[in-house]
Image 1 (cartoon, one colour):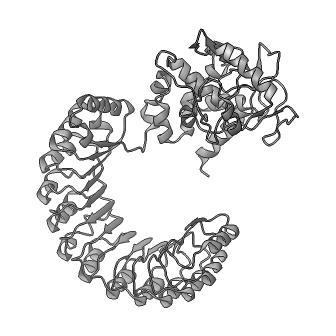
Image 2 (image 1 turned 90 degrees about the horizontal axis):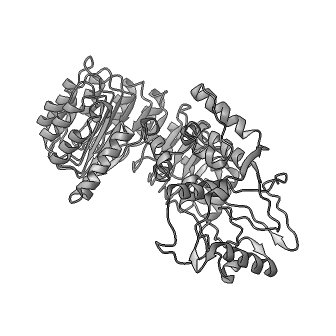
Image 3 (image 1 turned 90 degrees about the vertical axis):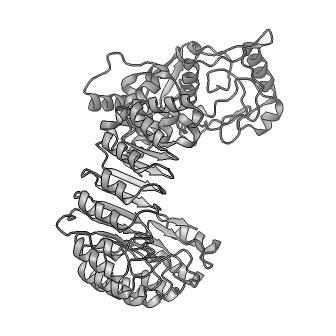
Length: 583
């Protein structure tokens, strides 16, 4: 569990333990509703009402204060001043039973589950978790209808009646209020001038919520922006959106210019440092650069996918947004090698090019000459040959550490030799789909690239057990090995790599010749953390039972294995509680 999640759970559990008292005690026992009204609510398991009376635009007026009130009241339901009960202890009398409330959900989910304030019919009572006797049912329903309905019209609940008399009087959950104040002091160095007394004041206090929002993921922050203007003004700060990539689909904006303008304004306010374009044209790229002046300094990463932009548009984007250091081009068939020669700058440290039909050896020449600080290169091109890999120079490209060549069908063992001479400091190498690579190429890699941490030779149909013997003997620092769809790898090859003590991630998906004997070799790999044996048809239930010996395993994938039936998966889950079983 991450540190942020632990902190969020700690604060959430503490807040749920706060005790409250009402300035106006009720004279008769009632079942308290989330919004503060004494009513009988029938809810389903996910917190939604079983049925609700129809609403009209005249009967309900949505305001920001009411939205915040509903959200906060459901998150912090009012309780009596009696000592708090344990989580699993609830009073059960002959007259009434109370079930646990759904107050452990996040704020964003609560906003989507606001129930109707109207009392429900007797059919809802049968579905409800709160069971009340028939006498109290009729009394509560009548009192609720008298308080809500007036002359046949729906009355709005008074937010002052909900929040004003509710005050914090204790914190039996290890002092959550003190912990919040210490958090505020450690982050801002300032104390609250006026301590919030009610839940509404606490959730509208800018100092508190500015720290509280850090405990939510970006997906929930996006929904929380819609609660009220106060929350939106706090969340529309760049500090909450670091590392988040917004996706702009220009295909949806061809006839809606107002939506495009609104998106550009929101992008500039939040200060994103990366962006993804889908279906963009030259005009779209020009509008983005002209309408978002901050992108010239803030944007660091750009991804362009399935777009018909030309070389001039790409050059215009990279020239004006000069801080770009990570570039991805996917399925951009108008980009040519000459365009990359004109637009690439020395700041780029990460480059990904996939499914661009005009990319060939001259593109590798531009990359080798114009990007001396390049750290990662991901390339999927069908026309790149061994001659293109010969353009890399060991002195000029000494910073390159990650090289992934996917489905480069023209690369042979000679290209592997060129990689070794031109890029000696590679730590991550992928030759997935390079079907012309043989055991001799893997032997050259094993003998000359001792710094490798990850090796991917999946979908290389000419790889046999001999390659795995070279890997096991010479690559002592290897941590990840991917052998997917290597149809000639057998149990003997698995026995070779089982001697590698540093290996922590092993993928042998659809290696159809691997059976129980090879799986028994894997049982001795105590440092293994991730194992995928998906599609290994020869594995039986007896062999899979032995996976219980891998107690340090964090993730296990057994999909499409005939031997991985329900009893086997149930047995593995019982004996490997710390392992994620993907079945």
